[in-house]
Length: 303
Image 1 (cartoon, helix red, strand yellow):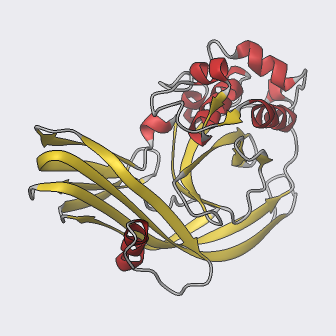
Image 2 (spheres, rainbow, N blue to C red):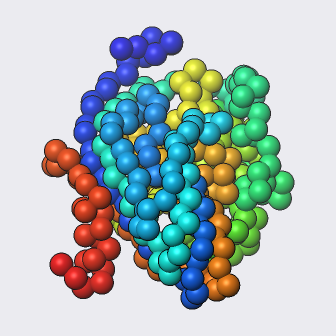
């Protein structure tokens, strides 16, 4: 296979199974729980989804549809009274590991279609306004696309310390630039804002680290005028060649558009996320909801 420019693309297909589980607890009875779940693999050149499913306990009425960016969304409405909601997702995906010999291009001459414009402008959590100086500092005078992206990604990797407990889902890129601390979501938002400030379309990605069990992960994709969306992870200091280490659930302008779980509930009490984790398997022929629930039971000390 070749690119439009004639450069080679090497594709290696790697099958992966995954399980995800989350538990939400409430201080009073919930009479209705309405959630939007983005826990199924995104379909693109880098991965091909296989059979996937989402289940909740208690069970609810479920519909599935693609949103405007192509993310697979399950909407689940639970009307059985409950004090706890468990969400489990399982599936199979073929990771198409594409090793691309990406040509660099002059940034000033790069042309993008109208569909890229929303990824150049401000979103709720990644506004390029206010990060221009940091973007120029990180770019270090580079005038080509890949050089700029590499410089920005590695600047964040070197300068923004990974630290839990300091930020929330509402922390903006500007906030991260002040504190210079945060988690993968925060580093991704700062990267988005800095790339946009340099005129590079960039979008947020939510998914899993396939070789590292735990919570969902966040990274970014930037638009190459000839090769389309290419990945970069400022948390790990990696650009383009993410190999089989990443499984993508969804894309958006920032986290607020593609949280793995979002929704609302009706109750006189409060609720919070009590536990969540995920795991991927390269050596399984199948996975089930029971595999996801076993992760939850293991956390409770029950086998």
